[in-house]
Length: 280
Image (cartoon, rainbow, N blue to C red; front, side):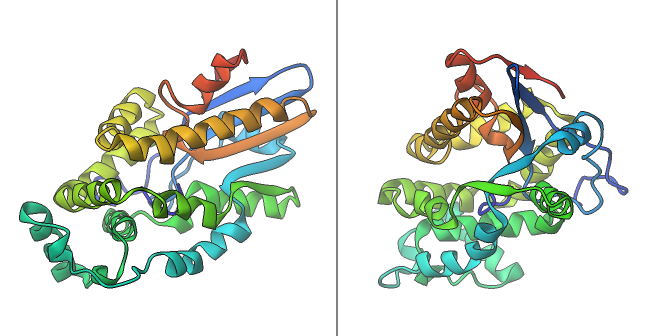
C-alpha cells in the first residue's frame, strides 16, 4: 500500500523491468491488473511492452488511492498516528528489537515513537528502510501512471481513501499492533536487503519469489494479514467483477502483494467464475 513503502543491490542503470500483470476480459470489457511497487530505484524502466499497451488502451486508471487522496495521506497520518498519552518505547520493545530500534534512531534520527501508536512507528521504520535502499515514491509506479493519465486527460480513481487505508492499522487490536512493531524493529538490520530483494523480484516479474517473501512477512501476524490484505482483496475483487458489467478498458494498478497467492485478487476473481490470464 502507498502508506507503507516497500540502490543498494540494484545495478546502475536500473534494469528494464517486466512487472507481473493479469487480464480479465469479456466481449466488451477489459480490466488489466498490474502489480505495482510504490517506490522504486530512480530510472527504473517498466512501462513498455504489454504494460505499455495496457496503459495506452485503458480508458481509466484505478489505483489504491486517487492522486487527491494520496496527497492527503501525510496530513491524515499526522492526525491519526499520535497516542492519546505518550508511552516509552522501552515499555513496548525489549531485547534485540529495542536495541535495533535504538540503532536506527542513532543512525538516522529519532522516530518520536514515544508519542506515536505502534502501527505508526512500524510504518516509519518501513519508510526509512525504503529510503536506505535508494527507493523513491517519485520513481514509483503510481507516480508515473498518474503523470501519464493526467497528460492524456484520462480519469484516475481510487479504491480507498487515505483515511480508510490508515484506519486499517489504527483499528487493529493492541496485541496485533505490538506484534507488527516488534517484528519491524527486530528485522531492522535485514530490512534494506529484504526490500532490495523484493524490488528485484518485482523487476523480474517473479511471482513465486514475491509470494514467498510477502507471505513469510505477513503470515507472521495472521490478524494483520486478514485486515490489511485479505479483506481488501475481497472488496477489490468484488469491485472488478461488478465493473465487468460496464464496457471499456481499465488499468487497475495496486500493490503486487494484493495480486499474488490464493487470496490475491486474480485468484478471488477466478473463484467467482471469471477467467483471468497472466499477460506479463
